[in-house]
Image 1: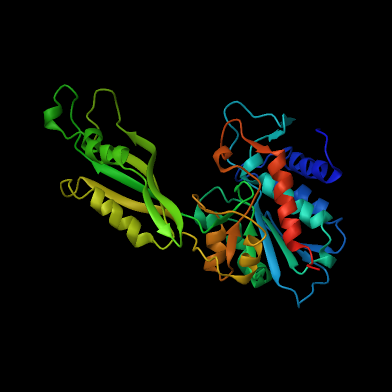
Image 2 (image 1 turned 180 degrees about the horizontal axis):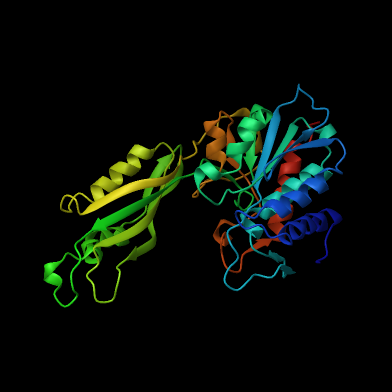
Length: 365
């Protein structure tokens, strides 16, 4: 443990507590069990559990105060091939999920356990949920929203995804698109008798390789639309012309664009191929999150001196916004550290983010 103020050490201890309980997607139960037990001892709060999701509110809420919900996911991506040991070193806390987003969960824990809510202008709600890193419809909030409807009574949602302590508005949408190229099998010694599905995909792959990010301005914030090949497979044997070649493309698209835009993009990219030789399917789709900087509670947050940036990733601000709750990203993690093999969160950002939120939530004189 490093030195510092008791509050600083408490934040680091919270993060270490979360990191010690590994929770790759699909295996959040043990962490959820321990967190539920821990929250049971927090005076003045009550917890509702649905599957491996926890929704928390005060036992005697003040209905006259605006409600703010803090929502953080418990899951991480799987451990790297060489497991990342949890440790504090040179002002950084290392561990899988440290930046995405257990540092944000640690801030939520400190707000829940240590902040003086009786002296705040805001009424707090908290949600810790599972399966954010997977398919859109398997996300734990899909279970929470219908089962715990008071979560959606919030006037503002703050999602502490990695933003380095800045406000990141909106979010890009994400689509997983499977593209299949159809050829005709033949002996590799006589390839002219077949049609090679792998080389058939060459022009399409070359287009993607050369494609520059498209910058899209939304209310003065610049989002980047990108297409990334993430998976590929094809062929049946070393001496057979492959008759199919399959790739997965992850497309990130700006706020204001939708599924029709994704489909039109792929129709355009594949338009030059002969009929029947290529097809695509959107197999997973998460809509973008709108940018709305005019909400009074958000304006108050920004006026505390916070920088505003676009969110160049998908987060559950989109899910809250689609359910009628304005939402924003604000967390202590570093976006560039998300999913890295040697992932870490900076202690200074952890402390700074908690301080900014606590200052925002404190009752004004």
